Image 1: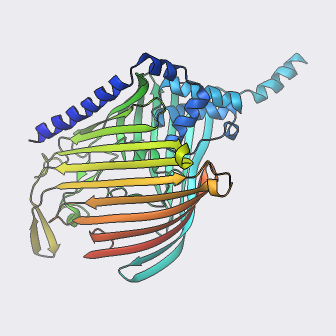
Image 2 (image 1 turned 90 degrees about the horizontal axis):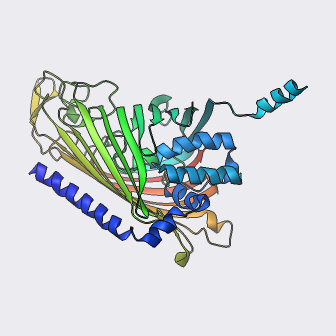
Length: 92
Length: 374
């Protein structure tokens, strides 16, 4: 019974993932996502947990340390992390 | 001359090794009314320095200490201390004591300047039913999937320990202790979390976590073969909505813990024994909604934040730690900067069980809390 429940939960999770994956695979959406700027990603991702920091809050050296910490802590993709912190370093 | 110029320039170049101290702290004033008994106090709060040592673009050591003075003395805890190495674009390995990604609250939202409330939801903290941190190894990463993002974590840690009648807190027999620096029975716990951000604006995240330990009892005892399975669902939605002139932030998490049943014979008083038989299933839930009118033209109003939270905790009926409590909290926050806020919060916890009081609980509390991240 327990095994069935676990399989049931896994099936639900996989179904949700499949449904969202299908809806998000149109070529225009994928291209729009790929072309997002660092500034856009900065505004959309940092706010998921905390307020958006100003680029002037830290210098380039500090941002590079924070980049590695936050990439892992927030589980950002490399693509997101690189664009966000390139923007922060260019704008501070 | 050239040498001197180069030396001066080198003074301003960053070194390969970078060390940084960040962290967060909070202070406050609390007022409680627990079943009619009133108390109030200024609260020195907490101070949690975070140490980051970056040796290269791939290798980092990170650690957070938690210094808590709310009990009247200084308690120091080690929240995490781990080494991480980026293996490639999609996989990072962490080893040591790390925050366990079972749901998102403890890993991402617990710092006082990130948590919109001055307290944790029911089900987290001392009587929490889910792991907060663990000692072990983890692989994690994220990648684009269509126009969304998927993140994952798989890990193994020292397994949780089952509290038993022979332990320090016999009335909590059947409860799990997760924070084990040493494994009690050479049986590791395994866990995973999968998070999906289906929309390209990263506004929404749905997560599923699973954590299992085949044996949680101490070796060569009657409890050796007791196993535990836990799962959690988490949900997050954060977006600035022009229609309502501000940012809406919704967070929620449901967790359930199932531990194999066994009879615990507890000595209630010297020479008086009681058999505790119960269905060892616990669950907790919280949902939080906050709204910040960031698009207001008034600089005072745009820094306000309205927040409400509901949480619930149920632990096994018939156990020595039986609890059935629910919490309603409402708060008004004011952001002084992007990383510092003042929280005014009213909280009401009702139900029964737990450490605070025997029988029914009706606790009303008022918190004034000032938190800063640095």
